[in-house]
Length: 61
Image 1 (cartoon, rainbow, N blue to C red):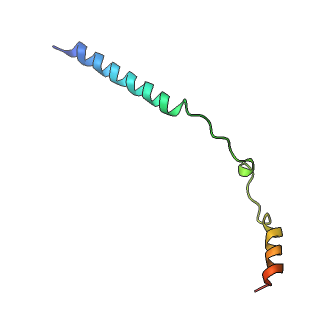
Image 2 (tube, one colour; image 1 turned 135 degrees about the vertical axis):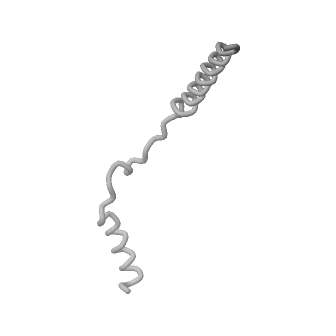
Image 3 (cartoon, rainbow, N blue to C red; image 1 turned 180 degrees about the vertical axis):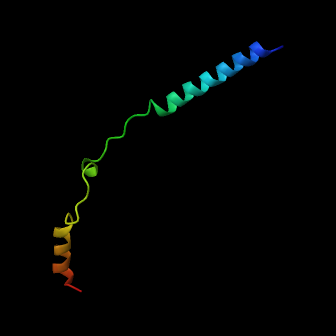
């Protein structure tokens, strides 16, 4: 069992370094603000006014 203590110490150090790095990368990111309309589902008639205006300009085809 020669070197078992050193191997365990290196394993603990390695795992601790991984946990520290993952917490730095994933937990300390600034949160991105969501757009205002992202939480509501888009309705089928939400672009109806734009469609009507384009139909008036180009005519129905």
